[in-house]
Length: 211
Length: 211
Image (cartoon, rainbow over all chains, first blue to last red; front, side, top):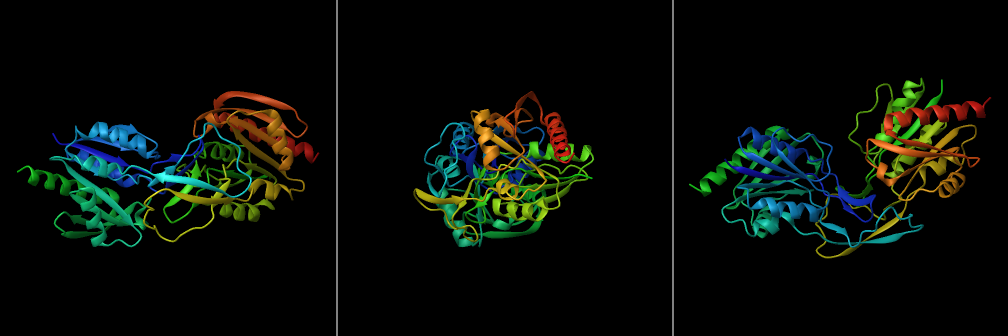
């Protein structure tokens, strides 16, 4: 049985117990991928940032808040997976420090110092061995060339390129960019339908790699 | 018929189309107040930041994202209300600038400049006339004295004090602090039950004010 590891949702990067930086990811695409993985007969592990979605039945759910927590869980689960879908919109940066509680607000303007987060998918893909790793690239103006550069830099097998208009939406178009530079554009459709195609494509890639 | 104006949820303060600063408010308390207002026979207007909650039936919903959008809607709806519940966890600060699209991430550390947001409830309470205005104070270590100072600074009639542990939770305790310094502590209970008590208390205050 193929084991699928899926990351989903945004991460939240707190500077105190209440306030954080985050992004507008709803988690829908990742949850749809996890559901499609189960439907395709895979054992499916879903590592999810904060969302309000119900986990798909039969999926092993691990909840995390921050990028560093997500990396910790993904590193622990990666060795046991065959195919990984890195769908989460991991925050690029986190506040340099975190205060306890809810400090009183600063009266005037202030500067929040942000430091880079680890790149979750690149960290594990660097030691992927025979695994198949699929990444996502969300761009305001998506281009195949930029996606391919990202695929190579992160050692992905496939990258799914979509526009920021997909964020939080129920439907999305997507362009699939493969390691050899081929690309296929899928028209706008419900994320559930897109997810089924993406899972079938990744499982096919994985089978060919091991044929 | 008494008209109730309720704010709920967090606000999101974007620095580009995808990334923002926000807080962990789920909107549950505000939505429960709006539902309790309808159940008590009030016309109810709910001004909500981004949440995943279903609006209570019969409530007029206005969706907003940022503090400034919330203020704009609240200013427009305030004159037509009798009682206002300011439950939203409005972000204290917003990024000084907002870029279009999703700019490429900065490679290293960087400083996000934050500037103060308007105080939504204090802005309208300053011209409240005969209206009754209820505020909320969420503190890591709540004290009646601090809540009373906030009530006076913001010209509230009643302030509901709770602990940060209430954030996003289904249950909450609360301490009600009145203009004359009286306080009443309500034990931990479902937010729906707490909401019914808070609405009854505010309507009672409003009736006495106009008796």
